[in-house]
Amino acid sequence: MQQRVVITGAAGFIGSHLSEVLLDRGYEVIGIDNLLTGTTDNIAHLVNRDFTFIKHDVTNYIHVPGPVHSVLHWASPASPIDYLELPIPTLKVGALGTHKALGLAKEKGATFVLASTSEVYGDPLEHPQKETYWGNVNPIGPRGVYDEAKRFAEAMTVAYHRYHGLDAKIVRIFNTYGPRMRLNDGRAVPAFASQALRGEDVTIFGDGTQTRSFTYISDLVDGILRLMVSTVNDPVNIGNPREMTIEQIAKTIIAMTGSKSRIVHKPLPVDDPKVRQPDITRARTLLGWEPKVSLEEGLVPTLAYFLGKIQKTT
Image 1 (spheres, rainbow, N blue to C red):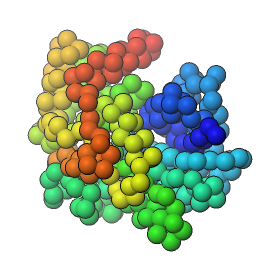
Image 2 (cartoon, rainbow, N blue to C red; image 1 turned 90 degrees about the horizontal axis):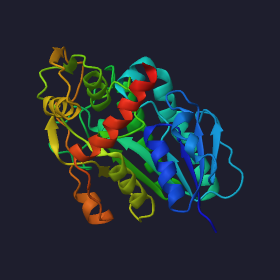
Image 3 (cartoon, helix red, strand yellow; image 1 turned 120 degrees about the vertical axis):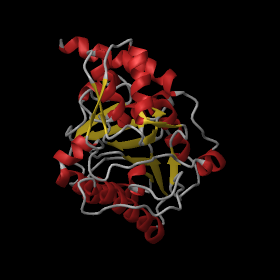
């Protein structure tokens, strides 16, 4: 029987890539999204395949007729701009949306995969971050709506695994980039790319010494799908352990675009993490996964995508 997968947040950046790769691997995909931050532009090329799109807010009951083998819960605002503007929807989809998605998986006897995040580690006091680290999160800070929504989602996912015996997985996603990100996303790569491609000043928040580790979208999707079909139920970091400063990333993008943009600095947002680097020992040993695409390689198609978007709007 052809495997059927439900993906919430299917019209988003990662959800659309997951949908595409699952279709390529012979799955039938049912994509659900309320289009709060996603767009049907990301999935328009999938319409003539084994792909069904349902516009629906997953904080409400999710009904999918027929068998479902896996539920991948990706619905959530995911950039600081989004969850600062949409704090309550962010909390609701992390709590109510996760509950409804888990309910669907339980009803169908399906595997459940939760999109969690490195943000559950907060501004970490452990470096690099292992899955056993409990985190350093400010629950009432401006970023708390996202951090705590994901931490609650993890707690509920584990409760369904322990109490109901649900085959549930948790992927902790570190910074990811690639085509289909929004230009106004607010995260480092699209922000720097859009400014550099337009010849504008490139804005760095803080002094630029804070670090991030960037994973190309194809590597991330490969890791997620390895986890989906594995027997692993503990959380797994999926990210690139190559740590870079924000200033290094900005300078790389400026150089690759051939831009004459200069770097300007603005104050660092509240609770912005100073370091971010995954320990991927668990992914390597349990999933046989590690990233293959370097930042420079992944930036080539990413910058081309952003340039096309800019040219369409000018």
